[in-house]
Length: 232
View 1: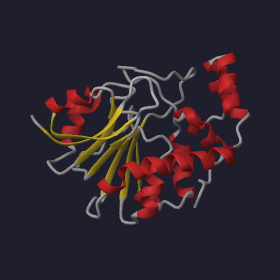
View 2: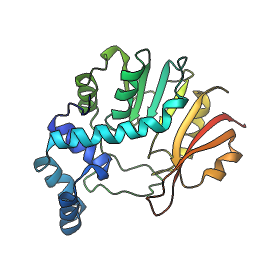
View 3: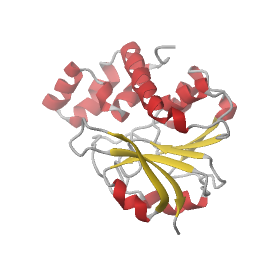
């Protein structure tokens, strides 16, 4: 596989979730006409889904390669917070066919999608029906898919082996929104992987904090960290 199967609706969401998937021409249109027109018109009618599917796959494969050595055979349950469509999880599923996936997502698309820090976590760009269709189209067994609407569902509360939240938790919104929940669903062996601009801050929260990547291409030089064991 070198591309995802991606319907037009899913391609739109992929671009809103990962703006780097848009080509230079689309980015120029976004700059000229603004976020509202880009989010509600351009991404609905002027995307090449096949091209987006290929770029999205390449992006998620690169993300997978930063995590691969931390995904262990005994990691049976994986919780993804803010995974978007779930392209990374599809690749994990292809490599390790014994995992069950749980997704916590918000089920709406903001009218004017903004990127940046949102301490209240109000920004959203997903459709859970489209997400599930995308996962199954790309050969993830529906029995392995568990999607939870952050605003309306009771979130799962058993112990997870691995928690992943790339470019979401403490990247676009405050870690504290999920801190108490993460304490409930983790044990001393649970790995929690996310991106942040304040890696040192988490040394006060976790027993172990390891930086596994630094994004040198962004202004704030965010770090991808892997954490184990809450201190309190």
